[in-house]
Length: 404
Image (cartoon, rainbow, N blue to C red):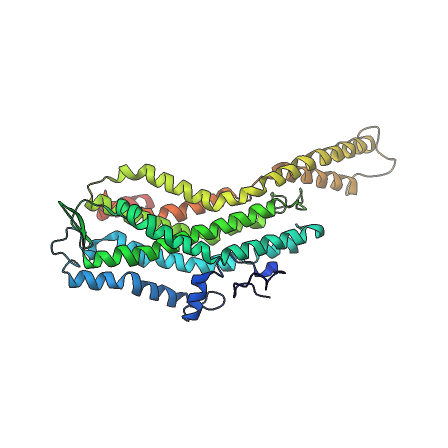
């Protein structure tokens, strides 16, 4: 049964967890399918990226050339030198589109894993399927996408865009004057077509992540059958740790977007790179929390399982240790019986290992390496900003010295 291809609320009352997806649905998805720009499993990624570039970037290039602002003219910031616009529509936007396929492929098996691994008790399967159905309905909500459009045109364009794009100088899209900023023909397309498309897709991603968070939170309300001695050191929930990698393209897209915005401010707005350090740290913390915090919803159950197992395994270990000492320590060795290779010693070691696993169990399935990889995905796109303060030749020389 596939739950991704329709909107009928009554047609999928018995949703299969194998059909779980936070991206495979919604009005825009249906529109893309009818326009033959997406398949049933988000194929045709290149076609969608090209189509969006033709709508968002190409008209800006054509209109700015027609207005004489593509390579210079009266604009202090011509179109070809606007780093942010190219970063936004030629790098960040394709990453947002490509992320859909990766998130779909990485997260779709997750719901079924809860069932296959026996984490959901038999008596809770109905409640678990209700979580899947609820997520499916929210993902397919027409009202949600209408509200997103309203936010883009009601808040994103009149306030956020003008504030974040104001450079205080003549650009290919706007010219400041005594009566306020005047948009060029390219600027009108930029403000009311290109930017709204980008903002809508970005807002839609936040909505999808909200669905993911809500799904995990609702599942965490079910009493799961966790395993305190599971080798993943997360009571059997460690398989969730890999889900954060599904959002790496989204993190990189944010880094690219921030990098382009800062570069414009430094090169054309008179700002210094050091002025943006706090902003970079804040954005990095937000993005890291966006993909990691959803996995903390199971921390309560994991910790409860760990505490209970610590007591129970501790009692078992204490009892076994006393019996072992009575049998094998001096004065208690059985006649004519060698301890070499005896199962009692191996059992003692196994019990100690089990207790060590229980004590090493952590509340979230995020390792230090995973955290480093996520930080790199966010910060690497910001590395080119160093070129705004250090010449490329000097930077290359420093890198050569570090490597030699």
